[in-house]
Structures are given as C-alpha cells and as structure tokens.
Length: 234
Image (cartoon, rainbow, N blue to C red; front, side, top):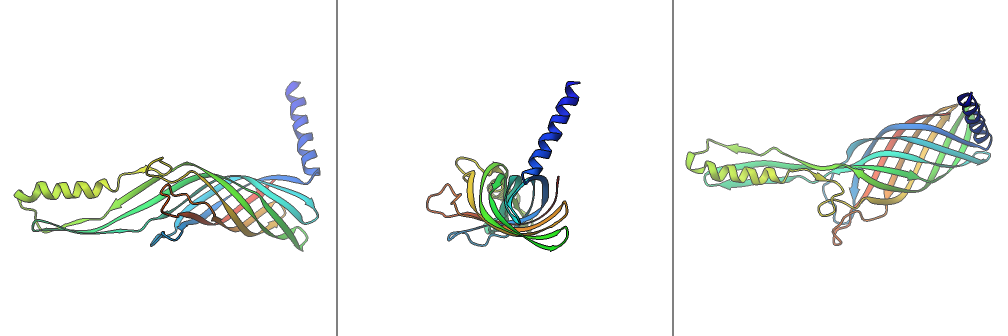
C-alpha cells in the first residue's frame, strides 16, 4: 500500500512540475574538442562523446532556461615530436604522438528562445555560461620510432637505452595530475541551435573555455568543444 501511495505521489509531483513549465530529458551525442591559446601550437581536434540529463524551464511563452548535468569527454591531440637521433652508426627516426583525454561533469545555464515552425516543431536558439569539473582521463603517448639497419652487438645496449628513454615519454599520466596534468575546474560560454519535434530533441552547439587550465603559469591553455546531440524529453 505504501508503495502505491508513493508511486501516486511521484506521478502527482511530475504532473505538478510539468504544469509549471519544467521538463526533464536525456541527451547524448558526439563532440570534437581541442585546446586554444597563445602558446598552443599544432594541436588537432579529438573525437569524444557527451551524455546527460537535460532540464528545460519554459517560464514564458517560447522563452526558457536550459540546464542539466552532462558527462563530457574533451581534450586534444597534442603536437607530435619528431625523432631523428643517431646512436653510434644506427639511426632512430619517427614520431611520438600524445593525446590528452579529459572527462568532465558539466553544468550549462543557457537562455533559450524557441521559434514555432509547424505544430509540434520548434527551432531553439540558446546561449549562456557553463561550469565543468574534471573527473578523470589520461594523457597518453604513442611512439612510431624505427631503427634503421642491423644493430651491432657492441651498440645494442646504447640503442636499447635510447629506445627506452623515448618510450618513457609515452607513459600515461592522469589528465588532472597535480604536477603534470591540467587544472580540473573549467568555465566558459556556449552557444547553440537546436530543434524540438514533440518530445524529440536535436542540438548543435559550441563551448569556449575562458579559464586557463594549465598548471604552468607561463602557459595559457583553454578548452573548446563542438557537439552534436540528440535526446528525448519526458
């Protein structure tokens, strides 16, 4: 009996919330992220994903506040290091590529304006700030260094030591490591355009970080992220 009463109370609460213009939903999709800043050079965009709970409070006709809690992967493919090294008569050549993978919990707070197109279909324009906190990830590397020619026995130890040193630079560290990683807190602004088809949602947006996430005070690194998401509101 208690379970039935509780279920009825929850249904009543959901109905009351809906009547007040607040709707909840789920959204998820893909995103492309990168770093930017004066000292940031030769980075490339990294593919990631986003998923979370969306909240939409329509306090006036066609005007709403949009928020939610999202799990988002960001980061960047960092610049490649070219290896061109000679150990005795042996040449080592190739590249070392590093990728920063960052996982965030992010809360946006956007003002949205909805344009009626057809009955049940609306275009949504939105913009506003966001705050994010890093919860995990790795900065990892990959080496493609090759050894040219056969290594003489008397040079093998030196070549192995050189390769070990190169491979050591690819060791993974936590993205938000207090010494070698990035600062976990990020905040910035975002804009987007989306569409509502009844309960179904589509959204295309871009976020630009405004805080320096580098722990090196002499280096300025900020995040940027574009996303495409689909969703369903209850």
